[in-house]
Amino acid sequence: MWDSVIGSREIHLYESANHFRNFIDCVYSRREPIAPCEVAHRSITIAHLGNIAMQLGRDLKWDPRREKIVNDPEANKLLSRPYRAPWKMG
Image (cartoon, rainbow, N blue to C red; front, side, top):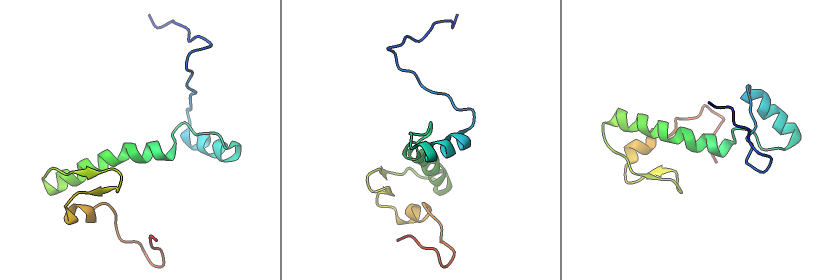
């Protein structure tokens, strides 16, 4: 049933059974990892927003450019947590 072969001119995606190893290998080779940071960040954002919406019991409006919840200071406070000294976001 699934015995088709991907042609030489078709898109080939590489596999990674170990994302951690793939990341380290890509640090050395400067190649793009199988899970780029930006993709991972954008992918998990929706889960975090869903959790915040559930916790507060209301819908949220997300501004992806600013990475802030629109007109909701209470919800925006839940986007991060306080850093331990001496660490801070700049």
